[in-house]
Length: 191
Image 1 (spheres, rainbow, N blue to C red):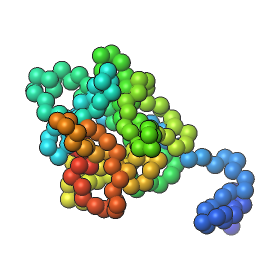
Image 2 (image 1 turned 90 degrees about the horizontal axis):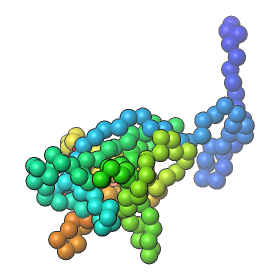
Image 3 (image 1 turned 30 degrees about the vertical axis):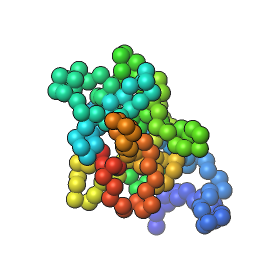
Image 4 (image 1 turned 30 degrees about the horizontal axis):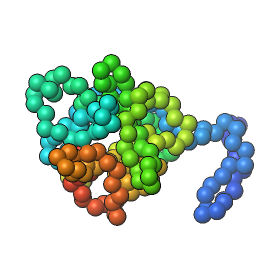
């Protein structure tokens, strides 16, 4: 017989059969903790690069020359990968970029009843104690395309980063997909 102590916690089922711990001493709360950072360019289905112009408050996919790409102004992204205590259908990530010696992070904000993608000056947080408007869930675009992804906004299920034609620009937007498994080329992003 083993004399090892086993910790037992009282639990209760709440509305919608959610599980709650009566005494949460020693239990981790849901949180995001930065794990690693990858650097590179974000491309759309047309092989255009995402370019951020904070002075104009615009982020759009553009045709870029090799010389502009080497300079990398407003187009060399950092993808911050987070560890989490909760299981999600996708890897939690945040995006940041440096433009003219200033750091910016991508976030989503509601404006005039519509969700808008913004780049705010500042750093991506190392730890996020709960929900955040900077977190997206990286998911495979399709099962047969391992280098292409779609990014779902963490605070609104079914809303994905995408591009939309606006005049001569292909602006970065959040787009609602009726079904998660829908193949919409405007949400396809390679890194």
